[in-house]
Structures are given as structure tokens and as C-alpha cells.
Length: 96
Image 1 (cartoon, rainbow, N blue to C red):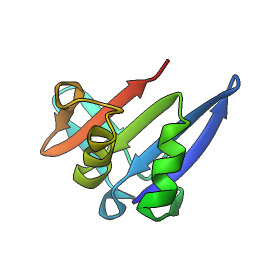
Image 2: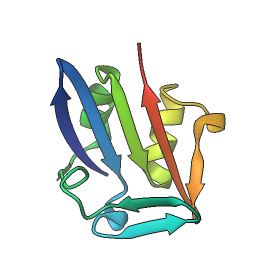
Image 3: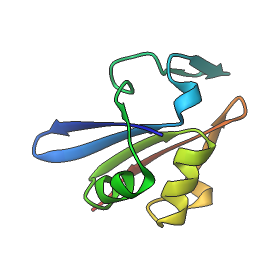
């Protein structure tokens, strides 16, 4: 998985994407995601490193089966929060 950490107003925002999706543009109906944008272009990290970042995140934006699955497994998101853009799962989470 590819992870990019953003900081905004003292909050940690995690953009997480399955590696094979980086560089793609996905869309379905009125939803469009540009996975070649600088928002998603980060670094490949191990699952353990990613888990640590997810634990301290305030906002999570995850795209792809592996990335979204990890968020659900860690209970940062639930299956009902997941939307599909085409057949690609996507979840946005705001944590308090």
C-alpha cells in the first residue's frame, strides 16, 4: 500500500491507496478520483507502519480493496461506510 501523510490545522490526514491504483483516474456516475494527484502519491510502507499512522489519524481517505480492508479490520471504518467507484472500494473517515 502507498501512504501519504498530510497535516492541516494540527490534524493528521492519511491518504492510503492500493499500490496498483496509483496513477489511475477512477470514476462512476458523479464521483471522480484522480489517484495520480499529489494527494495520493506517497511511499510504499509495511502494514505495521501503516497501522501506526492510522491509529493517530484524524482523517483517513482510503482507496482499494487492501487499503479499505485494513481500515475496516482496524475498526476505523465499517463496511456500511464504504462506497464503490466502479468496482473500487473507497472510504473517507473523520475520527474524533
